[in-house]
Length: 610
Image (cartoon, rainbow, N blue to C red; front, side, top):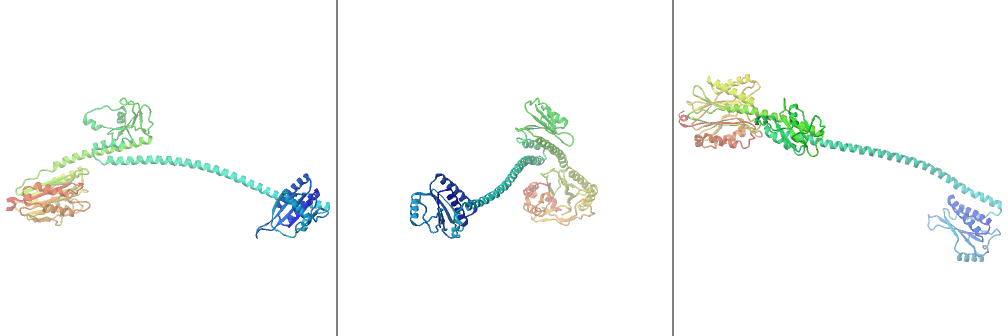
């Protein structure tokens, strides 16, 4: 649908503007869009009036291109080529033509419009194209009163736009305030995040520092534990002295020197020592000698040493239970010593002094025990028709001296008593108790008595003498006028007897209980035939007992070793036979207990006569 108006005067322009606004409203154009279109049209009409001449305003409504799409309202303003009006125009110069222009005037206008391009054109979407015929809306008001009323009514759209603009301004102000509050919140959040970040960084730094300190403390504690284990693993004080510098250099000191007072006394030497070391020996306190104070905890500062003026020295006494044993003198590593390092070194020196003191005491007790042990292991007696061979090996771990012993002596009636015993425990105390038992047994044997009677009396002696100490023993008695051996055992491994034909049997008749237990007992005698060429083996549990296997497999191995010996070798070389039996038995032994073996071989004419 097309509407055309001729514009020449101001009244024409006003009427055309009113008609265009009404037509747009009739087609459902929104207020804002309608106002925007009419305002733009008014500006163009004002320019046309300024330019003068005749102008032609055309409004076309186009149907939508496809269903669901809005139509278009197009406004065109163009200059007329001549002064003629539009065909069919009324006296007021306007007319609505629903079918388009017709007649000659229409042809001239069409040719003019074809010759000149439109001066101005605008379009808006039409939500309701074809709503009504638009004829009434496009009719211009004829008198000025109606014209003025129409112009005033046109301001309603402007009022609505301004009202919407006011609402939008309120919304903008509201959102501006919201945005400001949001910005303030964001700024506060950023400030909180910055503060949290600073706190987190501080916490991370503190955690990293604490982790570093914990790692350093763990390193020191690990070193101290490992060093303590290494120092206490040996009971040789010279070995401890040699290990100490190796533990400290180079991680904790550039050099380490140990001054042991006892070694100086033995060597009768008086080597020059730093003044700080002498002060540490006299006061029992660590000393630090350097040009500048060290400030180490628990350490006294001293002037630089005259022997080493350019080198700092840390002199730490090696304490014992009463007085220092010596002084440990250290030079610092490249990075020096911290307060924690000084505490560590002082503690290590304390533990070293204790380890050295224990080792020296152990060596002293061991020397006494070995002297006593050698004094007690007397020579075996020589008896016609009876050969004896004994072996004693102390344990290789611990004090090395135990309560194992063997003995052989004659009784007044001519009989020969052989003894194998074992006192519980090791060390000097066990050796002393073994000596007392040996002496008591010899005293009882002077009065005569069988092996069982001797062990019964020895049990009572030990129980009253040392209630918390126990022992085991086996006694065998040989007599030249008898072809048997009498024996008795108290808690001891059973004897093993080899006969001349190579048969070996264990004399495991029921033994008595251990000596010294709080129990009244009578230990009984047992006898076994002893033809010429027989060998009786007495031993302690250190020879046959293994922790992982027990004692029975060891006894069977001993019996097999004794069986493998040839009769001629036993007659002529009993000492060699003792070695041949002993060596294979000790191959799998850890030597954590003493070992005793006593071989008694009957041979020669005296044995045959008996």
